Image 1 (tube, rainbow, N blue to C red):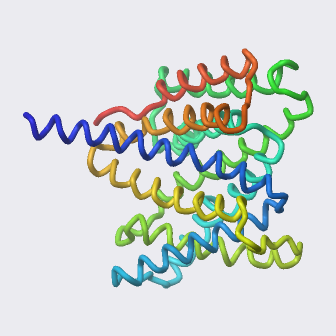
Image 2: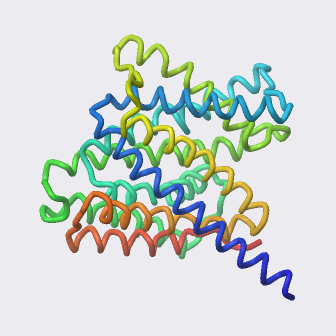
Length: 296
């Protein structure tokens, strides 16, 4: 009995640490874009740092990365949907929106994933979970429709960027669930998709000449490295949590991620939110509760 209680306590601690780390990457993203760098340049450099770290891990652990046609296609699609596109969209969104607002919108990922799973008939329709989808949609409308919800009315159009980023992540989730080769570990998947995203971003950053060139390693550069390490660490912890406590328990990390982003944005950047934003947060949390996967 004591062993079970200890394991349960450890799972809760891991849940909090993973959620705080992931939520903290939103704050670090804001610090990076405040350096005045272009979103594509930030995305390329962050992807390069992540690709180098993951490649080093693969080499040190004496693993290998399969490079057959099937694997290369998988890396390319997952890299585009999970890194190249959503990262650039999220960094540009951070330039125009508060950390709190972006964090609330990013809670749409599990809700959109369920919607796609229903469309593709990977999940069966369920009235309770459909209600959760509706609450998530209304939560976004509460953010953008009332004139008093955001600090400036012209910010509403920029909410479309994190929404599109959520759609990319949801598509990636469904694609990995359906197409991931069984012999690839999570970190092999991450390594492959990071390098694929890096190759895809290279011509874009080259043509647009939007390089983020590290200089004297000021706040932006340190924030970018910390953000990349935080993302890799949080993802690895999330995978461990699924194996230790199951996907239903691990799915609750979404609450911690969103709440961490909202409150850290207030603490670090002095963000203040209207009653509409708080209402949107409550509705999004309720939507997450309803769409949570069921035990099987």
